[in-house]
Image (cartoon, rainbow, N blue to C red; front, top):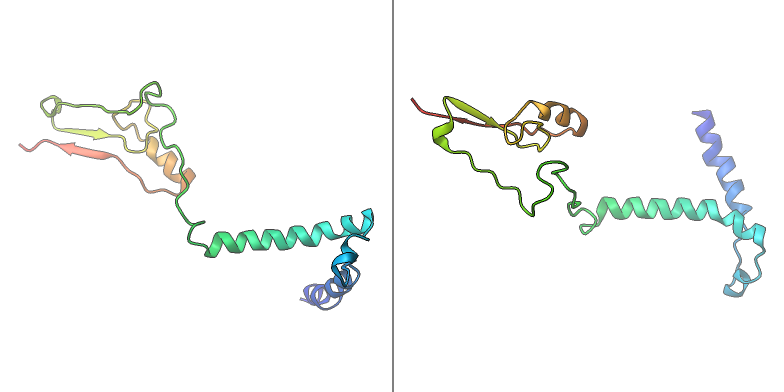
Length: 131
């Protein structure tokens, strides 16, 4: 804790007091190259904190990110549609919903690896035939 206390109470104020921040608007035009270089790190930190705050609290920033789910199944068509006749199902059929199956449209258990990698909870669609 002494290290953090020293940084907050001594090092940071000394660093900030040494920055070449002018007293007037015209003073910005009189800064030299080394002065501008000295202002880059604190400016980057303030910009980063501002961006993280925007991402955290702005409703517009929280909108869902549009990302592709299907990375390999029938990429040559505009919309993937498969039909399975219920009469072809003997007792049960297990269909993939994670788009990772090598045996599309049937599930091969690839969702387990997908769930572990993405912290998702997707599972297959299981269709059973009543007796």
